[in-house]
Amino acid sequence: MATAAPEVDAAAAAKGGGKKKLIMIIAIVLVLVIVAGVGAVLLLKKKAPAEGEEGEEGDATEQVEVAHAKPGVLPVFLPVDPFTVNLADKDVDRYAQVAVTLEVVDQKTADLLKSYMPAIRSGVLMVLSHKTATELLTKEGKERLQKEIQAEAVRPLGFEMELDPPEGEADAPKKKKKKKSASNLPVTNVLFAQFIVQ
Image 1 (tube, rainbow, N blue to C red):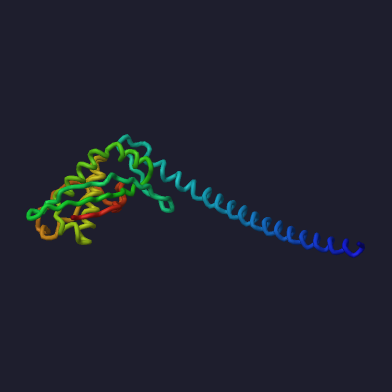
Image 2: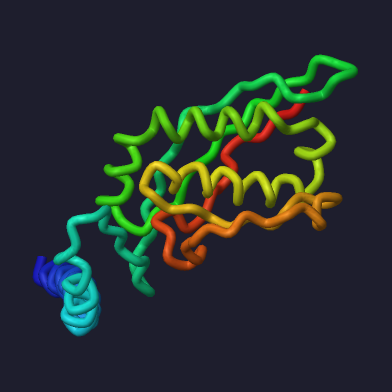
Protein backbone atom coordinates (compact mmCIF):
# COMPACT_ATOMS: atom_id res chain seq x y z
CA MET A 1 0.00 0.00 0.00
CA ALA A 2 2.89 2.29 0.49
CA THR A 3 3.59 2.30 -3.24
CA ALA A 4 0.01 3.25 -4.19
CA ALA A 5 0.14 6.67 -2.53
CA PRO A 6 2.97 8.07 -4.69
CA GLU A 7 1.13 6.98 -7.87
CA VAL A 8 -2.03 8.83 -6.80
CA ASP A 9 -0.01 11.97 -5.99
CA ALA A 10 1.62 11.86 -9.44
CA ALA A 11 -1.76 11.56 -11.17
CA ALA A 12 -3.17 14.44 -9.11
CA ALA A 13 -0.15 16.58 -9.92
CA ALA A 14 -0.58 15.90 -13.65
CA LYS A 15 -4.26 16.89 -13.47
CA GLY A 16 -3.40 20.03 -11.49
CA GLY A 17 -0.80 21.03 -14.09
CA GLY A 18 -3.45 20.78 -16.83
CA LYS A 19 -5.79 23.00 -14.86
CA LYS A 20 -3.03 25.58 -14.40
CA LYS A 21 -2.40 25.68 -18.15
CA LEU A 22 -6.12 26.09 -18.85
CA ILE A 23 -6.38 28.95 -16.33
CA MET A 24 -3.34 30.68 -17.88
CA ILE A 25 -4.81 30.38 -21.41
CA ILE A 26 -8.15 31.80 -20.25
CA ALA A 27 -6.37 34.68 -18.48
CA ILE A 28 -4.39 35.53 -21.62
CA VAL A 29 -7.53 35.49 -23.78
CA LEU A 30 -9.33 37.75 -21.30
CA VAL A 31 -6.44 40.23 -21.30
CA LEU A 32 -6.47 40.34 -25.12
CA VAL A 33 -10.25 40.91 -25.20
CA ILE A 34 -9.98 43.72 -22.64
CA VAL A 35 -7.15 45.42 -24.56
CA ALA A 36 -9.13 45.19 -27.82
CA GLY A 37 -12.24 46.60 -26.12
CA VAL A 38 -10.34 49.54 -24.64
CA GLY A 39 -8.77 50.25 -28.03
CA ALA A 40 -12.16 50.24 -29.74
CA VAL A 41 -13.64 52.59 -27.12
CA LEU A 42 -10.75 55.02 -27.51
CA LEU A 43 -11.13 54.97 -31.29
CA LEU A 44 -14.87 55.67 -31.09
CA LYS A 45 -14.37 58.48 -28.56
CA LYS A 46 -11.81 60.07 -30.84
CA LYS A 47 -14.23 60.08 -33.82
CA ALA A 48 -17.37 61.14 -31.89
CA PRO A 49 -16.44 64.85 -31.32
CA ALA A 50 -15.55 65.32 -34.99
CA GLU A 51 -18.89 63.89 -36.11
CA GLY A 52 -20.82 65.95 -33.56
CA GLU A 53 -19.29 69.19 -34.83
CA GLU A 54 -20.36 68.51 -38.44
CA GLY A 55 -23.97 67.69 -37.52
CA GLU A 56 -24.58 70.95 -35.59
CA GLU A 57 -24.26 73.28 -38.59
CA GLY A 58 -27.61 72.57 -40.33
CA ASP A 59 -29.88 72.58 -37.25
CA ALA A 60 -30.89 76.23 -37.66
CA THR A 61 -32.84 75.87 -40.94
CA GLU A 62 -36.59 75.27 -40.91
CA GLN A 63 -36.70 73.72 -44.39
CA VAL A 64 -36.21 70.01 -44.91
CA GLU A 65 -32.94 69.15 -43.26
CA VAL A 66 -30.71 66.72 -45.08
CA ALA A 67 -27.70 65.28 -43.35
CA HIS A 68 -24.70 64.22 -45.37
CA ALA A 69 -23.21 60.77 -45.07
CA LYS A 70 -20.16 60.79 -42.86
CA PRO A 71 -17.12 58.70 -43.70
CA GLY A 72 -16.90 55.60 -41.56
CA VAL A 73 -20.61 55.67 -40.64
CA LEU A 74 -22.75 52.76 -41.75
CA PRO A 75 -25.39 53.70 -44.34
CA VAL A 76 -29.09 53.32 -43.71
CA PHE A 77 -31.10 51.21 -46.15
CA LEU A 78 -34.82 51.72 -46.79
CA PRO A 79 -36.43 48.79 -48.63
CA VAL A 80 -39.34 49.69 -50.91
CA ASP A 81 -42.15 47.24 -51.68
CA PRO A 82 -41.76 45.60 -55.14
CA PHE A 83 -43.26 47.23 -58.22
CA THR A 84 -45.09 45.21 -60.88
CA VAL A 85 -45.98 47.21 -64.01
CA ASN A 86 -46.93 46.69 -67.63
CA LEU A 87 -44.18 47.96 -69.90
CA ALA A 88 -44.58 50.30 -72.87
CA ASP A 89 -43.83 47.62 -75.49
CA LYS A 90 -46.37 47.97 -78.33
CA ASP A 91 -46.11 44.61 -80.12
CA VAL A 92 -46.39 42.30 -77.10
CA ASP A 93 -47.64 42.51 -73.53
CA ARG A 94 -44.62 42.60 -71.25
CA TYR A 95 -44.25 43.46 -67.62
CA ALA A 96 -41.50 44.16 -65.12
CA GLN A 97 -41.25 43.28 -61.49
CA VAL A 98 -38.68 45.45 -59.74
CA ALA A 99 -37.80 45.73 -56.06
CA VAL A 100 -35.42 48.44 -54.89
CA THR A 101 -33.73 49.51 -51.69
CA LEU A 102 -32.88 53.17 -51.15
CA GLU A 103 -29.56 54.00 -49.51
CA VAL A 104 -30.04 57.14 -47.42
CA VAL A 105 -27.70 59.29 -45.35
CA ASP A 106 -29.26 58.68 -41.93
CA GLN A 107 -32.22 57.20 -40.06
CA LYS A 108 -33.95 60.60 -39.79
CA THR A 109 -34.02 60.86 -43.59
CA ALA A 110 -35.29 57.27 -43.87
CA ASP A 111 -38.17 58.10 -41.52
CA LEU A 112 -38.95 61.24 -43.53
CA LEU A 113 -38.97 59.26 -46.80
CA LYS A 114 -41.38 56.71 -45.28
CA SER A 115 -43.92 59.50 -44.80
CA TYR A 116 -43.58 60.43 -48.50
CA MET A 117 -43.64 56.80 -49.72
CA PRO A 118 -47.02 57.01 -51.57
CA ALA A 119 -45.72 59.93 -53.69
CA ILE A 120 -42.39 58.17 -54.26
CA ARG A 121 -44.09 54.92 -55.33
CA SER A 122 -46.38 56.79 -57.71
CA GLY A 123 -43.44 58.54 -59.38
CA VAL A 124 -41.47 55.30 -59.72
CA LEU A 125 -44.49 53.50 -61.20
CA MET A 126 -44.85 56.28 -63.79
CA VAL A 127 -41.15 55.97 -64.72
CA LEU A 128 -41.34 52.18 -65.02
CA SER A 129 -44.55 52.18 -67.06
CA HIS A 130 -42.89 54.31 -69.77
CA LYS A 131 -39.99 51.87 -70.22
CA THR A 132 -39.71 49.12 -72.82
CA ALA A 133 -38.21 45.70 -72.20
CA THR A 134 -35.25 46.46 -74.48
CA GLU A 135 -34.46 49.61 -72.46
CA LEU A 136 -34.51 47.70 -69.16
CA LEU A 137 -32.48 44.71 -70.29
CA THR A 138 -29.27 46.64 -70.99
CA LYS A 139 -26.78 47.68 -68.32
CA GLU A 140 -27.10 51.31 -69.39
CA GLY A 141 -30.88 51.06 -69.13
CA LYS A 142 -30.67 49.74 -65.58
CA GLU A 143 -28.18 52.45 -64.58
CA ARG A 144 -30.47 55.13 -66.05
CA LEU A 145 -33.43 53.61 -64.21
CA GLN A 146 -31.45 53.83 -60.95
CA LYS A 147 -30.93 57.57 -61.52
CA GLU A 148 -34.58 58.10 -62.45
CA ILE A 149 -35.76 56.27 -59.32
CA GLN A 150 -33.34 58.33 -57.23
CA ALA A 151 -34.79 61.51 -58.77
CA GLU A 152 -38.34 60.36 -57.94
CA ALA A 153 -37.32 59.47 -54.37
CA VAL A 154 -35.94 62.96 -53.62
CA ARG A 155 -38.57 64.95 -55.55
CA PRO A 156 -41.10 65.04 -52.64
CA LEU A 157 -38.34 66.53 -50.45
CA GLY A 158 -37.93 69.45 -52.87
CA PHE A 159 -34.85 68.23 -54.76
CA GLU A 160 -34.64 68.18 -58.55
CA MET A 161 -31.99 65.94 -60.10
CA GLU A 162 -30.54 66.73 -63.49
CA LEU A 163 -30.62 63.61 -65.64
CA ASP A 164 -28.73 63.13 -68.88
CA PRO A 165 -31.09 62.77 -71.86
CA PRO A 166 -31.60 59.20 -73.08
CA GLU A 167 -29.62 58.03 -76.10
CA GLY A 168 -31.04 59.50 -79.29
CA GLU A 169 -32.38 62.56 -77.51
CA ALA A 170 -29.06 64.34 -77.00
CA ASP A 171 -30.22 67.27 -79.12
CA ALA A 172 -33.37 67.82 -77.07
CA PRO A 173 -33.59 71.30 -75.54
CA LYS A 174 -32.63 71.40 -71.87
CA LYS A 175 -34.87 72.99 -69.30
CA LYS A 176 -33.17 75.65 -67.24
CA LYS A 177 -33.97 74.95 -63.60
CA LYS A 178 -31.90 75.34 -60.53
CA LYS A 179 -30.92 71.78 -59.60
CA LYS A 180 -29.01 70.32 -56.68
CA SER A 181 -25.86 68.31 -57.29
CA ALA A 182 -26.13 64.56 -56.81
CA SER A 183 -23.59 64.59 -53.96
CA ASN A 184 -25.92 66.61 -51.69
CA LEU A 185 -28.97 64.39 -52.10
CA PRO A 186 -30.51 62.54 -49.14
CA VAL A 187 -30.82 59.35 -51.24
CA THR A 188 -27.26 58.42 -52.12
CA ASN A 189 -27.93 55.25 -54.10
CA VAL A 190 -30.66 52.98 -55.46
CA LEU A 191 -29.98 49.26 -55.19
CA PHE A 192 -31.93 46.61 -57.08
CA ALA A 193 -33.16 43.79 -54.85
CA GLN A 194 -35.17 42.10 -57.62
CA PHE A 195 -35.35 42.69 -61.37
CA ILE A 196 -37.59 40.55 -63.61
CA VAL A 197 -38.72 41.46 -67.15
CA GLN A 198 -41.16 39.12 -68.92
